[in-house]
Image (cartoon, rainbow, N blue to C red):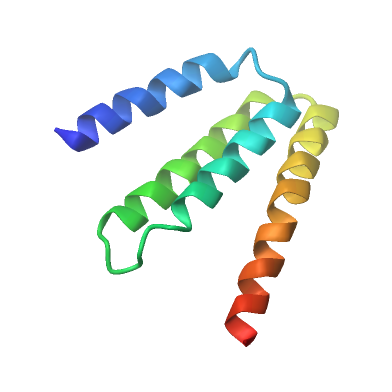
Length: 95
């Protein structure tokens, strides 16, 4: 039941994505990954949550496949948002 509700919410978000800018979608995908970093790895929901974020990213890119400028804008927003998160994860593992 939980999966069905999650899937319905996810599909609802995708339906709304068409009106969002590439920057907004990039940040939304990044925030999804950030939110899921706090789920512990033995938790079976980890893979499902990451899959939802990845699907969100693929679907956002599909919206922009015919417009390379929007695709670049989306990727830049995602990269700008994710870079500090990746750097922090890397630094935390080195310590």
